[in-house]
Length: 252
Image (cartoon, rainbow, N blue to C red):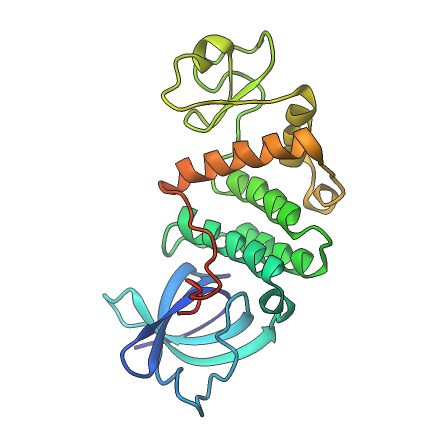
């Protein structure tokens, strides 16, 4: 049973047995993994507060051949992001970030850029004056990193490069569609204003350091939120549940 070390961000955890927890991490070197933390729910657990949701930590794990479940041996807390658990609006936005990562990433498929994006996203969220918008920008970037970049240059259904009339976003097709293809979609498309299309194209193409400078209000924001929510639902294969603060799914 070899010992492995990596850096990870806690996505969620659940009770297991009488005193343990099953914890889901997104790690720098192994991607999304699950591990069992023995005795994590005891009052004098050696893990302390290091297994809270959104925490960035260094991990010592034991890997058993043929078993997808790691054993968590030691956790060193790096950044707690405690403020994300103390404010309900911040918590909801942070939960959306980690829930999307959980839903759209396969197990055991490391992606350093994705890990860095999640870490930077949580850090940006802790400083944000508009948490919901910060989470929206994160989801757009994450879709691109995981191979689901929204198509905005041509019709995602037929490939037509010149779109006549107001643009429509099809969550099922994964991007803009022409009027003919929009009428054939099994699910309703989201009509986008030219301002919304311009915003989406900038959010996709700008470098991470510049994306945070984008602003969207009113109609543009409403349209982009509706389009991305619908697309995330398609990519995840299900509608992600809202955070229930009375019984949080991240830490049951």
